Image (tube, rainbow, N blue to C red; front, side, top):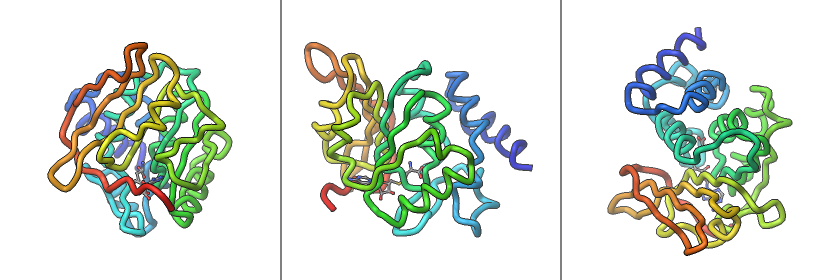
Length: 209
Ligand code: SAH
């Protein structure tokens, strides 16, 4: 049963590896990940891995989704942005943690899939999906308390930093072929406060259309 598989995932892949935010663990326990993977990969939905979703893109590993959410330090009530929506899974987890979720995906076919997945899982009213270049953010919906980026950039996109609220947090994988780090960037009166957290491997963030 998928709820049992989910409970095992939360215990073994998340809690044991140090994810401690109970709201994040509860959100990961609630979102049915099997509805966000291609039908032929349903049996692998709770594997400790990223999985292919088409167009050379992947649904992120559960641990990375949880880690990004934990680093965003959400308490409920926030407006947030999910950049690189892919399957829609991270957007659904964010919808469990915040109040208003905007999500942006550049590949229209994947955005269509994400829309269908989010509807199948019951999140269609809680996530507003945009199609376009997420490196530009969504200026008309800014500012955001938190922004999650699920694709790697050579540097944190300046437009995303500009769309953060004061003390807002941006989590973004930064780096190229030589390796990437997950960075947490906090907007402060003195400018960006950047902390490198863990090494990671994400598909590239592609600017432009
Ligand atoms: N959070 C997603 C991860 C999908 S992989 C999930 O768990 O399913 C990253 C996604 O970022 C891909 O779908 C890719 O098409 C998208 N992407 C890459 N560059 C982008 C950009 N500039 N704007 C929006 N989406 C982008």
